Amino acid sequence: MRRRALIRAAAGAPLLGVAAGCGRRAPAADTLRFAIATEPRNLDPRLATDAVSERVNRLLYARLVAFDAASRPIPGIADVEQRSPTHWRFRLRDHIAPFSDGTPVRAADVAATYASVLDPATASHHRAVLSVIDRLVVRDERTLDVHLKAPEPLFAYHLGIGILPARLVEAGHGFQRAPVGSGPLRLACWPEPGRLALTRRRDGQALELVTVKDPNVRVMKLLRGEAQLLQNDLPPELVDYLRARPEVQVARAPGVNFSYLGLNLADPATGQPEVRRAIAHAIDRAAILRWLFRGNGRLAEALFPPEHWAGAADLTPYAHNPARARALLAQAGYGPGRPLRLSCKTSSDPFRVRLATVIQAQLGEVGIEVRVQSYDWGTFFGDVKAGRFQLYSLTWVGIRSPDIFRYAFHSSAMPPAGANRGRYLSPAADRLIDAAAAEPDPQRQAALYRSLQHLLHLDLPYVPLWFEDQVLAARLGVTGYRLAPDGQYDGLEDVTLSARA
Image (cartoon, rainbow, N blue to C red):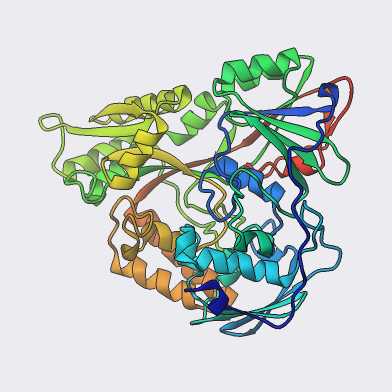
């Protein structure tokens, strides 16, 4: 689809040139350094796929929509009006911050951003969910009409892409390393791998994201004052250690990122429902949260927490019941004379290996012999996407839209078309997913999604584990940082730094 054929402009405005260079750096004493475990890889919101890049991009670029505490879409930089099942109108709100190059944000920029996502040459992973767009009509500088090929009640959930300047999109600008957005932060410079310098636009506060992979080194940098802020990616014992340090303040908040044990339903062993239920009853999730996570989490029964508008709060937990697990294994033909032997893949992160070892021991108590296999992230995730596993442990991060059910569980979403990595095939689940996605009434739609989650809880393509808490460690003198339930870095919009930090 050609971009010019997709967009029909009724009005437009010229854009000014883009500011070059890194910009002026604040003195080192005034810079707030945020030590993170993984470096952002791509600062183009159309192309970023890793969690850290997406968290940084949320601060560099403004978006059409945001989400409330129940994960419902609310206006971002635009008011949204659904004029018909296939006609959506977006009107840019007053007093939107300009792009970081000083040019104003116009409806033409929104249209150019979405048209570029739909262009196959861009190779954006957002293209699939936005392919329902038929055409974009720029009515004036502030108004954009979007016409869909078919009704899509969940369309607003797909509008979280950062908006880019139209002129730079057309020029093929390299946003990956030189972002130009209208978010609260702008890039000052990217001087070397592992160090990203940012400036908060409203007050000039200098911020630096410093990549330090080893959690022990991150803690030492915090204690020495070489970093002022850490968030997550810390073993619980290090969190407890920091709580006892007088120069550090530690805070935590409930999280919504869903941790689970994935199973291969195409495998002769894990494909049996009795085996999956035996695994669910064999894992003592409460004990793991209490002793391994030191209480920093809550049990999960479904991908969404109960407070999500489509969450299912009435699911009966799989209680720790070794006797029930052994009985289910016997029904599947396994027992002392024929033990069930499985492999469980995980990343090479030391805490994740320790977690997998604890699960290995608990499964061993009911007669399931598990071999833990740990790999570097690329190899591990490559195996998961390719279906080379019996068991694996992962976490879904930052999920808001119930479209995740189609992406993760629909029979049409087998990789590479989606993330149904466990090869779950259920006509009943497909019908519920299709019906819920097409349902325009929010209450009936939520009821369909709750029915779907009851089915998934019974079939167990995932064994649900927990929602880990969000944890913040900061030096005294750092104030105003708010923890987001999904681990976003949005607290950098308001954090302040005093000399004592």
